[in-house]
Length: 177
Image 1 (cartoon, one colour):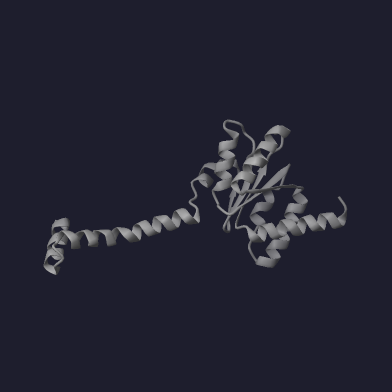
Image 2 (spheres, helix red, strand yellow; image 1 turned 180 degrees about the vertical axis):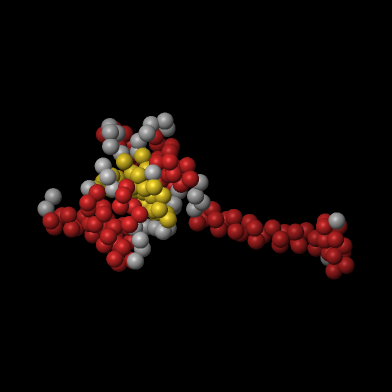
């Protein structure tokens, strides 16, 4: 790979780091080609971009992205040892779920590090925690559910109280008591 190709790859990775708030650095070494292809296909199916690159190039891309965005990626540098694969996603827990489902008892792919919206998770032992992170859509659903609950109580009180203020107050008083 010549200098122009390396610079181009670093620029491409840098843009991916800037565009994605969620990415995982994994170790897929020792996986047979057949399994790697299966992993790539699963990633493609679920909208997860996967790139294999040298650690030096990944680190340089992270540094360039850091300069441009002022986001701190330095906590990830220690994970850049040995073969590395980077998985980019629009959802924080999707790559973790994909990895957990894919390896089913195997030890690979192993999570070296994950960057979830400014938080850094190091090591494969963080995989379970990463699978439990809620996506933005799930969090919005939870908030909407919590906001709807008091309104549903009020509507229930209005309907059971005969649509009068005295009836509503009486019904609410009975619920509290």
